[in-house]
Structure formats: structure tokens, C-alpha cells
Length: 210
Image (cartoon, rainbow, N blue to C red; front, side):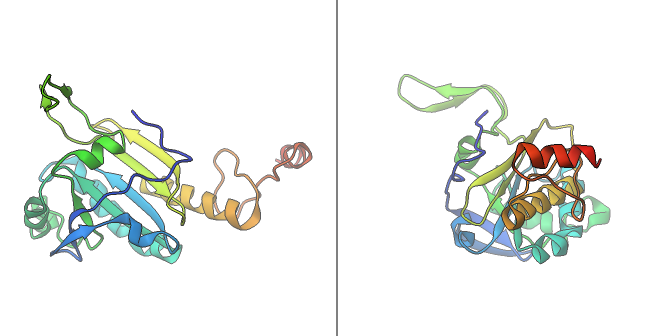
């Protein structure tokens, strides 16, 4: 697994489905650099069980992310046709109809590889060809980028473990607070609470009052 925190997020250009049904070519996160925070998350497969609960949970909080200047983008190794088909299926039937944020099609697996979240046993043959002995699908990776495209938070879950969208929002709040106030955010901090100054005296003051 790669640790990308503190580094520029790997760039890519791929097909994606946006606004619940429009297939676009050459979708890239670079379009947001200088303008938006980005919450980029991977999920294993379309037409599964845990994945739609996460996709709908991010949609439910999409307005909260956007209000903080953050774009939400999803990605899996399925094709854009698969994404499109799943987006037409109602939620009551296990589909993801109603999702409006972009869903990237990582059909070449290169995005998942570059973000360090591709599962499966794989390697290169003597002819330098990629070969796999297991399913090459993405773990539940999540990456929060600042407005300069630098990864500031990274989380990777195994397939059975769904993520907490409120925690993703909390991390966005912490990043914004740090950028705006120059303070660091202690354990379990939430927006509106006291944070710490980046000094020994600031930490001591915080601990004495909490």
C-alpha cells in the first residue's frame, strides 16, 4: 500500500459517469486544483451489497461537502457502461439511482494501482505484461485532497468494512480549520470546539482546560 499523505494526488484521465447518467471522456481531478477540496473514494464493485450503502450515504451528505467547497468523486474498476446501468436501477432494488456525483471507470486498473488500493495477486511476466491470479478490484480507499491537489488524509478499508461518511466530513472540517486558523485538531475534535495552537504552551493550555 502506498502512503500518499503529503504528496500530490496521482493524476489521471478516464471515462466517468456524471449527473446520474452522462458519460464523459477524459474526466480528471485536475479540474478542481486551485478551486476545490476533493474527497475521492474507491469502492470494490458495482451491483454489490455494501457498496451502494456507501454511495448513497455520500449522496445524502453531498450538499454538506459542497457547502464546504469540496467535490465528492467515486471510482471502481468497473466500466462506464456498468456504472451507467447501476445508476438506472432504483435504490429499493439495490441500485444507485439518484447518485449525482461523478463515478470514474478505472477499467485499466491504473488509477487503483497508483493510489495503492488495488487488491489481488498480480505482477509482471518476463515480457513485462501484467498478470493476475486473483480479482483485481479496489479496496475501500478514501483520499482527501486540499485545494492544491495534495493528499491530506488517507483511509483504506478491507471489503467487508463500510466507511463512516460523518468521519470524512469531520476530517474535512479539521483540514479547513487548520488552514484558516493555523491550529491543530486533537482527538475527537469536531467543528466548533476548541483546537490547539502549534506550540508547547498552546497544547498545555488546551490540556489544562479540557
